[in-house]
Structure formats: C-alpha cells, structure tokens
Image (cartoon, rainbow, N blue to C red; front, side):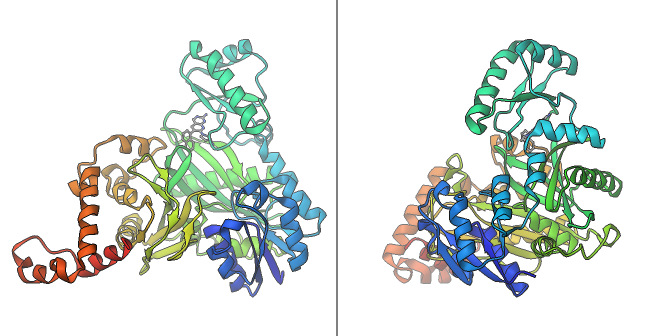
Length: 509
Ligand code: MV4
C-alpha cells in the first residue's frame, strides 16, 4: 500500500480524499495556489506545497508543477479528484512516465471515452444500446439534412469532443439545421479545438441516470447501483439521489450489466460512471462515460455502505476487489444537495467573500462534505461548490425530512448561498412525487412560489428585513427590545428564537 499520496485538487473533494488517506494510514500531500494558502485542504493535509498563481492553468492544471511536488514530497500516487486534471489522459500518461501511480483509469481507457463518436463506435461493437444517430462526424449540410430526415426531428447536434452540453444544439425542424450546424461547429472549435459534430435523435425531457462502476486490475468489474441526476440547471447538477425512484430491481440489473459491458469494452479500471438518458417509456441509452470519481459519489457510498475513495486507492495499489457483484446490496435512500456560493435570487450570480459565521448541521442521517470554515474567504477563481449536504434514511421520505431539517440548521453568513433554493425544491409536490426530469428545475424556477412566506419571496421585504436587522444590531440586542418581546410575546405569533436572532445578528458584524 502507498505511504504517501498527493491530492491534485482543492476544496471539499481534496478534504474528502485526505480523510480517506488518514483512515488508511497514508500521509496526504496538498498542493495550493496563492489564493488557497488558507484553504481547508491545506490545513488538513500532512504537507502542503505552493504551485503558483490563482489561475488554474498556472496551478491546478500545471502538470509539470504537480509532478515536481510529487517528486519532492516522495508521494507514490496522485489522486486527481474531479475537474482539473482528473480526465486529462496526458496527465495520466505523464504520471506513468514519472513512475507515480495515477489513481484512476489508464490514459488509453480515458482516450477511448474522450471522443463521443469513438465511444459510440465501441459501444456499437459491444452491443450496448445508445441513442439512435451517427457514430462519425458530419461531412456536410446536405448529409446532415438527409440523416436528420431519416432519424426524424427533433434531433441533437453534438460535438464529438464535447461534454456538459458544450457544442450541443437541439434542432426541431429542417429550416433550423443550417444555422444550428454552424453554431455547433464553431462552439466546438472554440471550446475543444475540434469542430467534429455528429447527430443523435433528441430525447425530449429525458431523465439523467448514471451507474457507478468499479473495476480492478485483475479483470473484475462490478456496478454499485444508479444515481438519479435529473435535477440540474444549465448542465450543473443541483440535487442527486440514490437509488433512482423510477428504477426497479430488474431495470437496475439491466442497466448495471450494460454499464459493466461499457467499462469492459473500454478496458476500464478504477471508479467510473456510465451515464444514461431515459426516455418517457423508461428505455435507457448510453450517453457517455465519466472517467473520474464524481461529485455525487457520497449517495452511492451511503446506500451501498462502501467507501469509494478507499476502494480507488486499493485498486490503484493493485489489490483485487474485495467483493463480487452478489455481495453488493442497496439499502435505504440518500440525497445530496450541492451548496454553491451563488445567489439564487440574483440569477445565480457567484458570491465569493468571507464567511463570517458558519453554523453547520449534523445529527441522524446527515453527512456533510465541506471545504469551508468560519473566517475563510471563498476565492472567486474556481468552481463555486462549497459543500455537499447529504441526507440518508430508510426510505426517500425520511432522507428528505432529515435533509430538510439539516438545511434549516445550516447557516452560512457573509456570502450568498443556494441553501434557500433546496428548501423550495424539497417541498415541491412534483419533487415529492419523484416526477423529476431534466426540465424540472427550469420549470420550477419559472413558477411563482406560492408556498413561500412573503418575507422570503419578496426581494424588497428581504431588504427591509436586512435594514431592520442592521438597526437591531446597531442598537444592541438588549436596548432594541429583546426583553420586551419576552414579556408581551405571548399575544402574537411565536417569537423567533433568541438563539436564531443572536446567530443572525452575529452574521451581520
Ligand atoms: C441529449 C439530450 C436529449 N437527447 N441527447 C446534455 C449534456 C450532455 N452530456 C448530454 N445532454 C443531453 N443530451 C439526446 N440525444 C438531452 C441532454 C440534456 C441533459 C442531459 C443530462 C442531464 C441534463 C440535461 C439537460 C439538458 C439536456
């Protein structure tokens, strides 16, 4: 087993991996950019090395600097987390060349999944169902017109090098095709330096369900069940859960076995995720494979009882999987909220800044993976994911009620977060009934929220409340009538808790 691992990442995922290292008796090496000197992952690691300025391309994406730290620190392996270099096959190759173990798949397996047209060709050979369409780049508008007519509108144009919705265009009818093709091509060229675009039948308001797989270096591949990831906004996931409320045991087995075939066709090792789109008739289609540990991995950990990061490390060290498919069972229900430093009342505008007060929830069935602490300043240079709050229960309703309770305990002062948004999602009748597809959140955000008290909905009322709270703080809690309320409060609605008032008062300082 490794004695020392370098974590080539920051924030909550770096903290998550450091924790696994420490549980396994492995020393953890952090790297940090100039603006991350005081970040939590640096504080939790056993050693930490600066790797350059805030700009990711000069720090967390700089392969030479990271490998230099690996050499100087004596780290035998690198965990890339998610984002940054995690799906960069050049980095995996550079690690191999430097005799440092990359905790993830081989560069070749990453490349096999990197191009969507290549991946579709491989899936065709492996007999995996994928969305009808072509598996090679479009040559001309005339060819696109002919194929679209065969497949039937609506169709989707996608960049072969794409992912996350970039270079993707939904086309409803033939007259739109020319400009959509031009737009998809130029977006793909700009984003990936590769203008290859292919065509797929569009699935209208699909569900997005993904299957976790694990493969060791001895030819064993297993699936760990699915995650429902349909709740997203602009290709950014917001809430994920496991199991998916619409997947039954038979469908789980069929999807799982398909995911294992996908992984085997790519010569995949370590942890990976196979993404599927589900149509209204519950047909599932292979979409793409993510060759990394995903943000939402904790929901799978909670319902399987497995630790994916421990297993990633053990697989990378050459150990065989310590269980087989029959040993894996799904128990209970888990749901994750992604806490972002962004303002849901102002078009989800990023909200970096200093965290003046942090009241963090815990209690039964609650897991919190966080990269923040009180007094820390959230930098504006990176993804705004601050923390993940995960609820676990015997069933979906219990997971939701625990999560709702924990959200009401969560208070992050000094910056805006999307915590209020989750309260709205979790009590939405359609969400409660699990009627969620990839269009749910946009539809909900367009609706007027009739269940929200006026004070929380009306931005002006909020401003008034802030001014009132400011005056309250200026005058001091005693002088402003905290005592009076204790005397005459009985006649009115229940007075807000003095503890809550004191906490919020503190946040205004
Ligand atoms: C699709 C689709 C419908 N039909 N492909 C969006 C991100 C990229 N990974 C694939 N995406 C989609 N591909 C076909 N043929 C709808 C989406 C899509 C989507 C997929 C997963 C999660 C959220 C989504 C939001 C909008 C569109």
